[in-house]
View 1: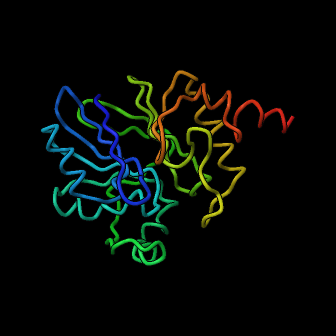
View 2: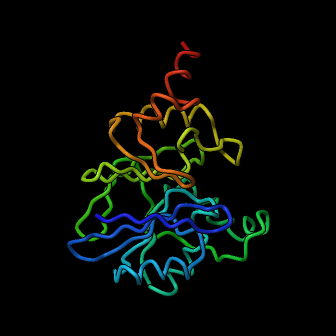
View 3: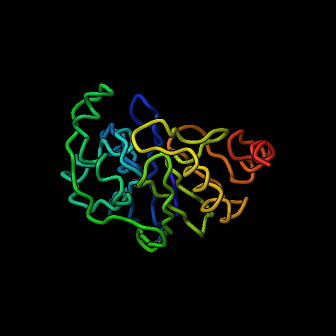
Length: 217
């Protein structure tokens, strides 16, 4: 599977373009906005957009969804139903964070722990990882050992838990009990910032690495 990371919006949110190289089918993970930029990337690869995958309901991750659906008539898959309140509040989010107006939408399919989703012939596993938001999911592609973690985990940090329905201890549990068991050799693409690996974060992340665990023990 080919993976292209495309930062969009003033928040520099990492939208990922996933392309099944066997079928040339494609999916966007978290298309936060700047539709022209996303379309240009899709056209450059000459790929056929098949679906949209969402990790959670914050505006910078979902802002371009309704417009892409109107253009391509494709399904929206994810996040977990617990984030419906955020999707319903898109217009209010736009006003609060000074984004241009975005329409709300209803996902075609809500996701839950253990689900499988596909782009072309490629399959991704779904892990429900609440804490940043209650309905946050992580998408894991086994063949490339790549996890699309949204705002659960960052290189050297973790997602915010001070936003509506965020919870610090729940987020830490999600990382340690859902992500770490996938293995240290898994690389992850966050919603913002650089790519890292679980091994690197287990070692040095100040929130969930060795130093953090030492403080707890």
